[in-house]
Image (tube, rainbow, N blue to C red; front, side):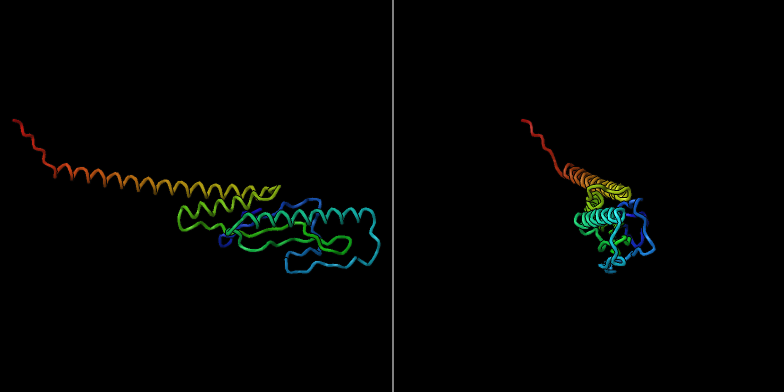
Length: 186
């Protein structure tokens, strides 16, 4: 999903946050931290703790697949690697419960380039199986950016045709003035 905050023309694809999984005080917002491999106090997990671990493992896989889909489909609009928000499970391991991928939302130097970029952003935003509300918002913003670029391109082409028509008309007028018609009747 892409957040609506824009810094240096960067937006973010973000995975939807699961309200059932709340970040703990041990959450990490950096992809540079290593995931813990130790079991918490080497104790046997209760049934509810095992279920929580299972839910966290499933969420971790969903979040990583979601962000990977953004990266794979986002093309050159992707502005970096995914970053994740982690939650520590009862087993002491960290699980991704949210994530984001930065994208560049700056337009191109031509309408054609802006259209291409907007299409990449839309593809990246809608790539996950279940796009989040933020992903849909980003896709909508990119569709608007593409529409404006298409309008600009259409205006440029219309202006070019208008200019070409004027030149052809003026050229035909010059030819009529320079042509002499002779009517020789016997």
